[in-house]
Amino acid sequence: MPLSEIIYEGGLRTTATHLASGTVIETDAPVDNNGKGERFSPTDLVASALGSCMLTIMGIKARDNQWPIENTKVTITKIMGTDPRRITEIHVTFDFPAGHGLDQKARTILERAAHTCPVANSIHPDIKQVVVFNW
Image (tube, rainbow, N blue to C red; front, side):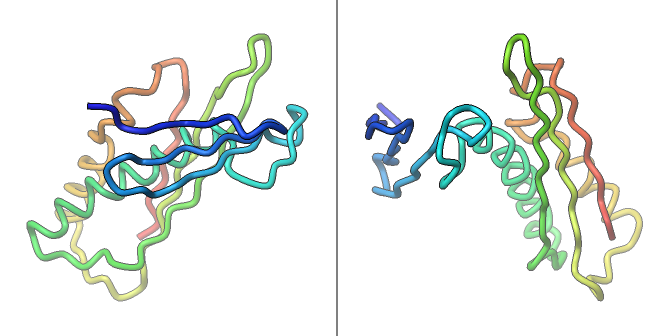
């Protein structure tokens, strides 16, 4: 069954519709690649998917153990390379809210869970994943 439908709108913009929910994501080419940069670029989505996936897998583990990780923030930095143009590094920084009360064992379990997310395992090994957990 198809996952999404993507339409080229012109002006280096696309509109992707998630067929099951109707949710829409627009993308633009980035300014440094002749675009407007008014939306996520496709490579921004790849990088952001890594952080979102890691946090989701951690959320499953946290839910199963009744650990509070709500309001955890993830900041993504994408490093682009040239020849060919590609993502060379993705930096993922987790900032956990003060007072979460998680002990070292819980933290280790959550960190290991993050590194097992399907997106992390799908990204080419030449793309460096730099992950920082600020507890």
